[in-house]
Length: 80
Image (tube, rainbow, N blue to C red; front, top):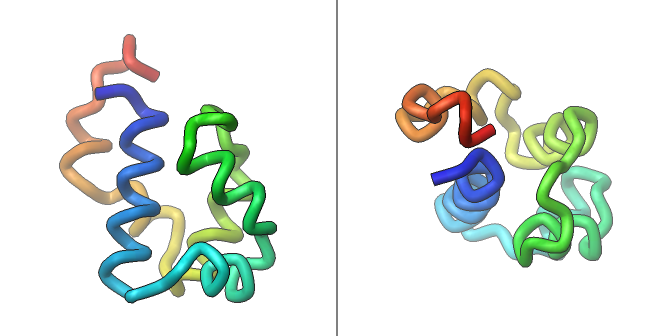
């Protein structure tokens, strides 16, 4: 799996765990719904660090917590 897919899957997992819609994540994070949809639907395959930080703020977690998963720890550097 590549890093883009892992980021997308992590956003979806966190949204599901918190019963949070794209709209609610947008309100809480300050990231527009269109930007979130672009990440989730593959139009934007390289979200920036600031965008990811804002999404993390919306989820109430740190960037460290976002990336602290087995999927990210086992990512092959060639897949980045």
